[in-house]
Amino acid sequence: MSVILVTGGAGFIGANFVRHWRATHPADAVVVLDALTYAGNRESLDGIDGVELVEGDIRDFDLARKLLAEREIDRLVHFAAESHVDRSIHGPDIFIETNVLGTLSLLKAAKAVWLDTGSGRPHRFHHVSTDEVYGTLGPDDPGFSETTPYAPNSPYSASKASSDHIVRAYHETYGLDVTTSNCSNNYGPFQYPEKLIPLFLINALHGKALPIYGDGMQRRDWLHVGDHCRAIQAVVEDGKSGEVYNVGGGAELPNLELIDRICATVDRLFETDPGLAERFPEAPAARGRPSDSLKSHVEDRLGHDRRYAIDDSKIAAELGCRPVRSIDEGLEETVRWYLANEAWWRAVMARQAAE
Ligand code: NAD
View 1: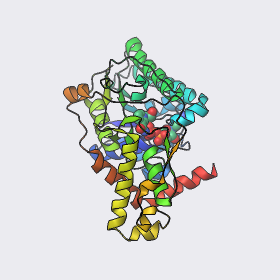
View 2: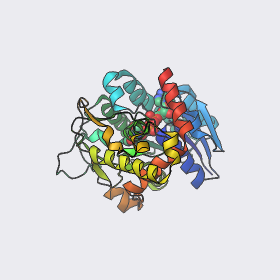
View 3: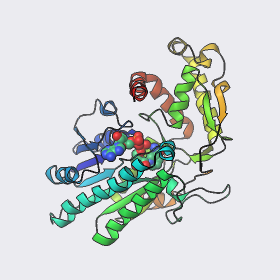
View 4: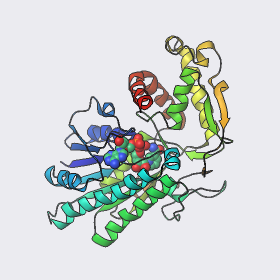
């Protein structure tokens, strides 16, 4: 039995990971450390037993040290971060404070408890990072590998890049057992409705414009959060200490094509379920019109990277881990989840409006 600390466990990927870990490791205790910022939701952990939610900040060194020592935590999976690129363009400070200084604070606490007090317990600090640290690719470049040089372009990706380097340094300098994963764009249940897939879906349900940055030809590799959680588990359990693993979804698409697929999924589900037109009368699909009629191009994001793609051959070869969901299966599952969990996203959006 293990006791695992999940930072940012009330956020999108963290909450999915907590569910995944409880399902696959029912004997383990899970402690979530989350500051419940605008992106964190208590409700995302509803209905899971064996999880203790501690409301607190990863920058609070004393709190992290106390939790690690008193709960006898031997694994830490670090998701907590400011994660939205657009927000980092308008207000970079909190990205440095949370993503850089917060990660440093956690590493200091882990070193204090796992190395300095000499408990000798096996430990692991897993850091969840992003492919955005590698910058942008040309149309024919090979995907990012673990040896691609860092070239972050936004304040968000620069803060994540910085945290990746500090994690590495704690391994090289102090011998802390660390692993890092850099993944592509995630999608799936419990994603905050400011991110592309839930935002466009919810806008389509309300007959609101679908705002496409620039020409919409930015390419991303879409990773279902369930596949991401399996990959993190593989790295936490079997990854080599000090190593980095890139995780992709095997679904590289231009944004425009992804948006067309979201629209087509919504249209198809409205055709087969007449109850949806009653629930969402403002949706074009409720009146037999295509959801993609809502597409509207807006000014591009500053410094918008054109293309990300992942070379996941290392995690596939060393840990036997590959995504299992196709983008079409994953999208349909996700759209169905949002339709079935309207209370969750309405509560999140009501809080957002009150901010
Ligand atoms: P999210 O924004 O949905 O959740 C972040 C969580 O961290 C929230 O619950 C928030 O309350 C918490 N948090 C923020 N600041 C905190 C602090 N100071 N102390 C404690 N908790 C704090 O993010 P996400 O999309 O779930 O991303 C999780 C991790 O995965 C992040 O590190 C992100 O950089 C990385 N990542 C995400 C994606 C993606 O597509 N979502 C892709 C690559 C990497």
